[in-house]
Length: 202
Image 1: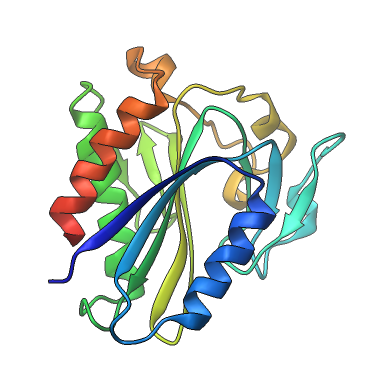
Image 2: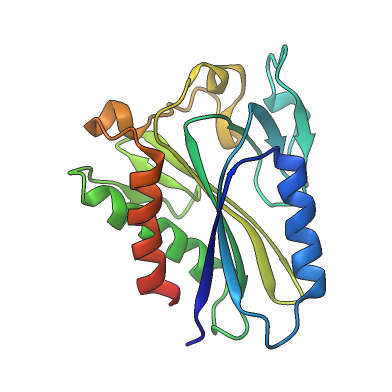
């Protein structure tokens, strides 16, 4: 299995990183190594390709951007760790579904280290603790190469989630690690999540 390159992009606007992901994917060859980019975004709501605008209930000062991933609406903001997974699924013999499950499993195994029991849902991709959503997944696959990824709520202002129907579900509760187990360090979660990605993809 080929190696994975990990990059820490710090905090960057989502539209800038989205553009970089598209350019990276367009320029890939069969020899291009897979990469995983960790990033934190300023506040923004994003809609998937076929998402319904009505799921944004009250955006107010937060910008709304339609992007080319699957799924409905979600929120990104400071204190949330986003892992963009630029993966050649054909080379790794993955399906879109198995890639989603791999991303979910990496988060589930990471938070288990903190004493948090989490799980995925076949009917609604993401990672949940009880009925509350901890991490959202959204992907795009082009020429067998995936981009976008998974966003984990670590220690953030959850209020904007109340202005949307998260992932298209009215009244869906959203949670974060700082509330569940007191872990609020993005750098710690990033390091532990990187370890799980290395086991899964490295």
